[in-house]
Image (cartoon, rainbow, N blue to C red):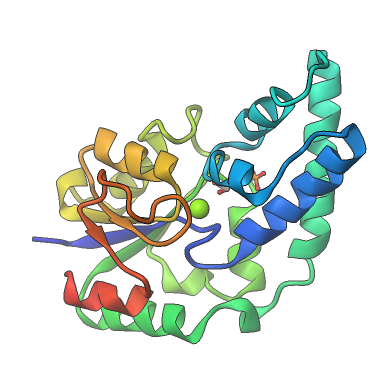
Length: 211
Ligand code: G6P
Ligand code: MG
């Protein structure tokens, strides 16, 4: 029996995965690091610092802790410039229809995101009120693929992990969900076709048939 659906944010509810990629590209172009879309797919869902570490591993150069902090801040600044232009029109009609439909069916809804910018994005896109709980990167100490953020979301909703369905576009997110004992739905990105997923959908309104 499913009582709740926990949504990843970037690449599931909104297309901010593209904005993350574009912001990383500004940095990688400057540093002379080859960073095609396929490489980005390999770091989907990882925290800002974990993503940066993986990207810098493609460079022969060594970076100090201070340099890494500065690069992470620079990436976030470029990313936020794009986020500040977001509005409610950036949420697909299918996403809003899915959230409405799940709510009507009595499901509890949460966001489970590694992003420290999650609340800002939900506010800008006017999605905040659609959710009963929001667990984000500022509330956890261990990022995906650790299950902490999803367990936090389930706790806030007061449901057992096994009663919650997680929707993810990242393999790291699917791993996090399964490690926490939650059910996992793959939705695009590098989650697509991943055998870890219990279900796979290509549009979020298909969730209405799974609950
Ligand atoms: C999400 C995205 C990642 C991003 C992470 C941290 O999980 O999928 O690509 O690195 O959040 O985001 P932040 O907005 O805190 O840099
Ligand atoms: Mg994602």
